[in-house]
Length: 409
Ligand SMILES: Cc1cc2nc3c(=O)[nH]c(=O)nc-3n(C[C@H](O)[C@H](O)[C@H](O)COP(=O)(O)OP(=O)(O)OC[C@H]3O[C@@H](n4cnc5c(N)ncnc54)[C@H](O)[C@@H]3O)c2cc1C
Image 1: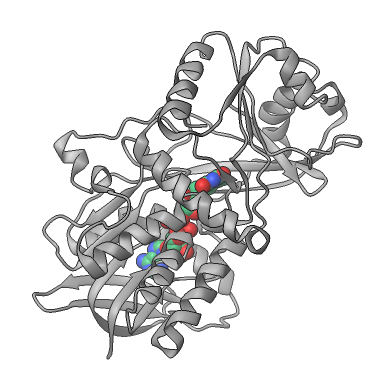
Image 2: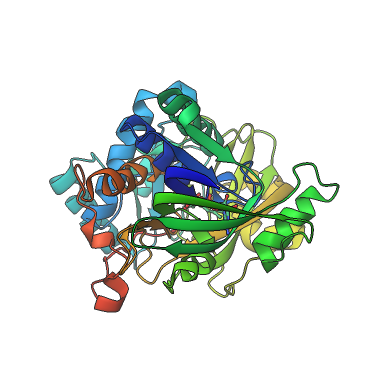
């Protein structure tokens, strides 16, 4: 049996950030457990890399802004490309966008500017078809980063601070979490690292909760457990008796190419259709959230047909040069929706030894630094020390105290 001060469940961006902050706060022994530390199906490896502080709730602005300040300091290490968000609106949504912008500037000094259609074209001459666009907000401190580099930086810093005191346990599937008065017992199935059907084994666990038959049972204990299992929190939290309203929802991303369209001088674009896009090297990365997508752990990608139906019309309608745009590839990953579309940070109800940090609903990459710090504060001090994240407590759904956020893509 292995004993740790803290066991972190899930080694995505949140789990890796929590581990780093715990190590930097002097926690002596930490274990990070994950089915696949490489994260092939984790949201942290499958997202769009967008970073913005331009939210409608003070809670989300605070977590994003503190994280942005960190990313600014490690800009080259994490590929933080701070070229802004250009978010275009139709006439119906424009007044609310202007109101949100005024609030963001007055209360948080974000320096967001309103652009007319002519100014949008001046900002990016490729946007030459602006019918139906009433205006855009441009937020210069926002941008794009490489989530894999961010995760690796968190892990490297965790190792640097904790030395031999930190263990990243790969191929470890947590199946039981039992809080006791003086410790938490975690049981897991450890499967073979180089199993011939490695990828399929990981997919079977993460989609169907079907572990390999030859997996070995292991038992670990800790003073505190932090649940950072993202979209899988809906499966993992019930292990300690907490049924959480986190919904896994597939989101697809397409990679396309067209000659003479180079988006590298720009950051993120959001079209009034809801399609968002940005540079992916010299290609274009674009995504769209299908409101009819069911809750499910699934990773299929609908390919060319989806691209032709959803992505091509939006981009070709906005940039005439995109008429020749061709589909190259794509993928899907899981969003982790909560009822108010905001993350969860806090002690699990009734459990002083279980901290929850999941459900960031499309915001987990950009907020991971500050959210990880907040969770680590709860572990070591039992209270928030820097940003008060009480509004994100897990009990808020039952209390009806939802966080109000509306600026989602
Ligand atoms: C298409 C798409 C686009 C997105 N775009 C953005 C964006 O532009 N900006 C942004 O900030 N966010 C974006 N997101 C959201 C962001 O990716 C997530 O919020 C973030 O990655 C969540 O990180 P996490 O560490 O909580 O979860 P994950 O990265 O999913 O990590 C959870 C880990 O838990 C492990 N796990 C699960 N169950 C168990 C178990 N029983 N035992 C052991 N391990 C387990 C999994 O293997 C996984 O590695 C996007 C997401 C998607 C899908």
